[in-house]
Image 1 (cartoon, rainbow, N blue to C red):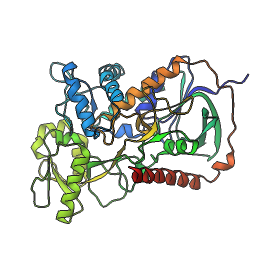
Image 2: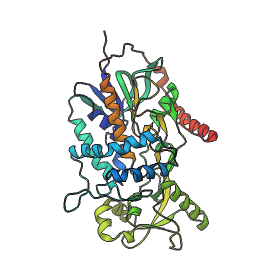
Image 3: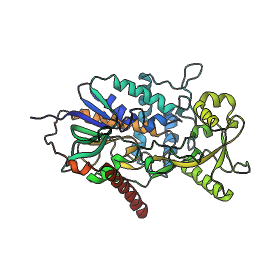
Image 4: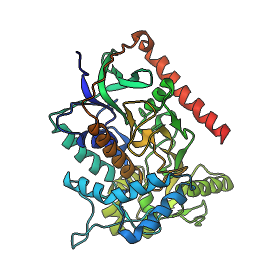
Length: 430
């Protein structure tokens, strides 16, 4: 009897895909797909940090900050799961060599961001995502049971009767497709930023898994819940917007209008600050407002935010001497493929994690620095759920109709249209 090509097929090499692979048993064969290079995921771009519960006394505050930011539309069980799992997840990251900032005594240093009532965010300069993801990728590449394929895109599921048996994979170099069979499949392809003109995301992140789920009748949720980040560096140039981390405001940076006057509370949740900025831009008749980082101080700016300082300097602004122009841009997707506490979707054998998935943690608006944590925890839980029922075999091997994928441009346009239409439909129904 034929066996599946792999025990687990994972689409995406951000922290969700990598963490899932690392938490699967060594005797399970895993294929990891990356639509571009393995290190070109939004996980690498995360600047601010990753949250951690500071102790039992912090639970209520952390919980309340998360649900308040999410407009109380969060799933309480999911929020509790994330918060309670955070210390163990941080310990796991440290075991892989992730270096979080520490004080002279070797204790973790914590920073604060908008929406948090206290500092509870671990960081590595202003490249926390790169620090975490690069270590996880290195650990995955060292596993003999995991194969990483770059420039290989999941373009459809192999499914029958609401059961997934793997996926259809397109090779970017040849344009050819192949059917890959797996006992379990994890969707972890990231967000929808590539569908927006102004976004902090990589341009190739276009909601692929979401579109495939819509096509295959897998339940999705809150496709219209898209977060705008208040502060990205303003430029007339085309391309991905450079994020200026919320941690900068957490450390004391202030927002100024065209006359140099402060106009809002910079530590409110992101959607509130975004609204204040847009209102001020309309009042001033400008395309941006100004972010003054000088209150942070030279030492903290150079030590904590070297990448941001360098980028602004490259664009002609010395953050130690002058404010920089900032504007809101699309940043994060709170909706996605609906999953339970173990990352299971409405389709058998199909899981989802990371920005692709909607588990209810974020509600309508994500609290700063919950994204990496949530992605890692659900990926690990998905891996454990798969491992618990391994050895079932898939039984069926449906064959894809290759004619459906011959016109790649048309296929991708149809997928983009499907995501937009679903978002508009949900917006009308809210």
